[in-house]
Structures are given as C-alpha cells and as structure tokens.
View 1 (cartoon, rainbow, N blue to C red):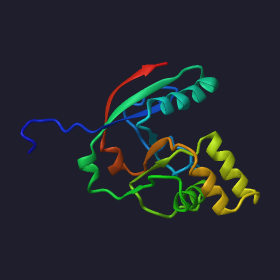
View 2 (tube, rainbow, N blue to C red; view 1 turned 45 degrees about the vertical axis):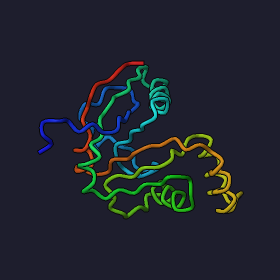
View 3 (cartoon, one colour; view 1 turned 30 degrees about the vertical axis):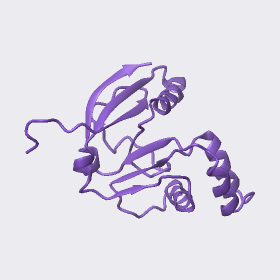
Length: 165
C-alpha cells in the first residue's frame, strides 16, 4: 500500500476536437508516427497545435488532461527515443508504412511535425541520405509525444479534466 498517499505522475495532454475522458484505441488513425494508439504530450503547446489542426476541420478544439502513473507503467514494455536518431527514423518509417510488428505498450519520442516531416519526406523521396536526414533532424528541438498502444498502457492514464480553446 502507498499509505494513503496518491502517486503523482507526469501530466500529459491530448489535443483534439472533443473531450476524451476514456481514451481508447478504436479511434486511432493507422499510418502515424508510432502506430495505432492514443497520443498525448507533456508539452501543452504541442497539444494546442494538435487541437488547432482539428479545429480547422471540426470547429471545436479541446485539450484533455491526464495523469500518467509511471509506477504502474514500470511493468509495461516502453520504447523511448530521447532524440531524433536512425532508430527513431526507422521506427517512424515502419509505422507510417503499416509495417510495424513490434509489441511495445508505450512509445515515446519526438513528433514528426511539419518541419520534421519535410525532412523525412526528402529522405522518403530519395533527395537525402539517412545520414543527412539524421544530421538535419538533430538540429530540431524534439516535441515529445507518447503513444499508448495497448489497453494495459491506457490503464496507466487517469483523466483529470479538459478545457476548450
């Protein structure tokens, strides 16, 4: 027992068009950075960008807020990319091409945002080598995202609330 004290974990945000109090895997797109999953970020401004993108399509923008129980997640398989790297790029390429066959519960790492994606597209299209791509990506400041890919992973998130923006 924890003696009645609550375990306070990392705060994570999800930017979308509506409040998501019960995250699931059913609504995930498939060909995205870290594969099918529920995406959150510890960077509020990143969640705002995600919300604004949705708002252009739906007219509404909501940021949902969660507490991540890192102690419970200790039993799960977690892949973490601390920087843009060849391994990160290879993983993104596999996921975006629907060729990821790994069983990670949680994947964390940099967001392939528009600026980063332009660099990756140049690699995909053969205009840059892997080495050139990695060198360019390393100059970017990673915007961290977490992808919760299994029900067990989703169970480590506790909904705290939301705000419309």
